Amino acid sequence: MEKGYFDENHASYNWAEAVGTMVRGETAMNYQGAFATGALITDLGQEPLVDFDFFKLPAIDPSLEEAIPVSYDVIVASKEAPNPDSLKYFMEYAASVEGQQVFKEYIGCLSPNKNLPDEMYSELEKKEIEQMAGVRSFFPYDLATDPAVADTGLTAFSKFLAWDK
Image 1 (cartoon, one colour):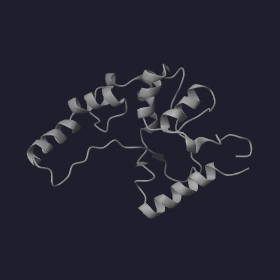
Image 2 (cartoon, rainbow, N blue to C red; image 1 turned 180 degrees about the vertical axis):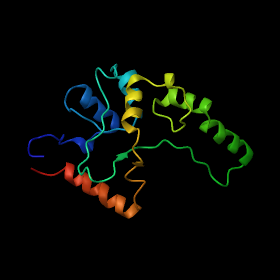
Image 3 (cartoon, rainbow, N blue to C red; image 1 turned 120 degrees about the horizontal axis):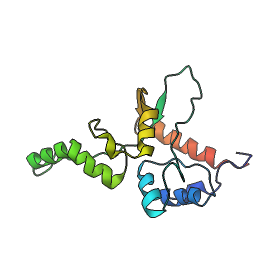
């Protein structure tokens, strides 16, 4: 913190503004969901593996099992849905290879369906898949933790990043 490695204004940015600081060279790294890849390419004219890249954070304690923080895009439905048969059909389609191909093209992130053809993925995405291979634990911090604990943890993260030198 004392060396100025963290942007003092980080809490004032939405995700798109935060990515913009990286593109302009104001920050070196940015932790975002895979959706940011699409914005970097389409909206900001960045080339994967040239202008931006992906890497796993190194383990703090190599004696612990490796785990990777991830974010999820999910489709949820109410049990009170007015047409459960149509809903079930849609959910099955959304999870299918064809449905995931449409979703992947639109969103630009890795699919949880392992049957998507390799040619659907860019070189950057193939690198992500390769680096995640063999990792058994994936977690979205705020969703994998008791809500009260997650709230405390996220507040602590914010306070750490806002630490006054």
